[in-house]
Length: 262
Length: 206
Image 1: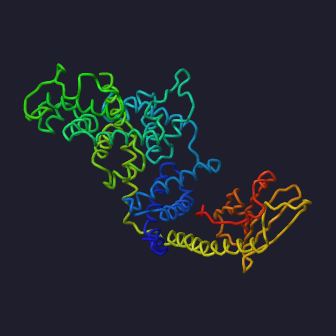
Image 2: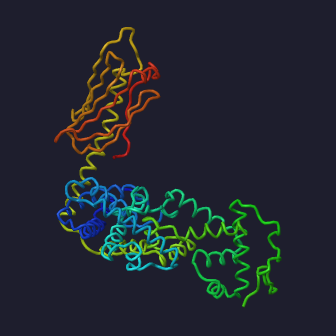
Image 3: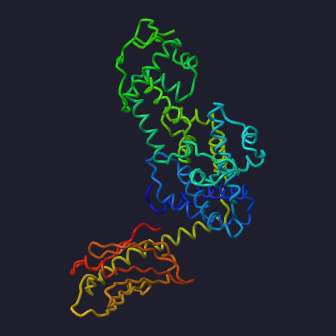
């Protein structure tokens, strides 16, 4: 698909995306008077996105163009703050607080935090939290912006950046790439065990059931898988060696070296 | 065990990483590898922010069967028409300019014994795009472009003189004119060979 006429047809076919995003933004910011301006910006962005779209990369046109269109409207909003289209500084500070509190709750609760829980922990109303969440959902206040926003949320409390927020996009990609490549080098059972426990987040019991193994065998697999990962990612192995059964919590049920089935 | 704890920490951090728009899009299209899908689902089970982002994306995508309004289609066609007109014109600018520069021996690095001003004008055949080359007595070289063809707004050009290059973009200077200017300083002229002819090329449309 490289003929100009094909690409023009794709643009016309995906105009719904521009209208849909523009309407969402107008609804969030209560700025219907800017709907046509946003659609104009979004249309130009859609044309640029379709210009650069490569079907061989696997993404659908709408998915690929989504960021372009939304981003162009985001830029329009920022460039027209003085014309009454504005996300105030106080809202941005509030959003930063919501993100920080949310991330802390996410870590401590191990499940999705509720809006009420975020509101209580951050001393905001649920309406304020919802406002911030909606702005984040449409990336009208960006994570990167929130990370770089140097402000004190309360007069007596400095909001500390959480490590997850402070990673650059490049660092995030590298972290993922390193671990995935290392996982691919593990034997299948150890790889599955580590993935179920740490990537899917199952408990030992749940992971063992999923693999059809005992909990003890599962723990052995996980332990050895982690040691393998450690070695592959560049940390030195312990002196006990890879196939040692000297760990005290290392039941040997016979069968394969990594423990038997249930 | 410290090494294992370190790996556990890294895996945990991986699960906590917020999902980018591109990742959410790929996940929504079911276009991710298995381990990545598991990671994203695990994260979405814990993260209200990313869940809301995904839901927002899905809400937007629900409109895909809606037909665009007539005036939206007309607007898009107008933009596309302008682009097509611009694409046809840009190729002719490069050819005309580079031929002109060769014929006129526009060599910014060429220094006469007695420095003097020089002005050379050029244009495409139909006169719709014009340019002026100026050699100042101070040694500075300036190239200015101008056109009434507003569809050229946003066209980025790269101007080359030997080892020195400049990038410029045609911008609206008045309601009915686009223009651009590049200059080479007297210091830069020193590193341009006397025989290097000025040339331009068009970058992708800005």
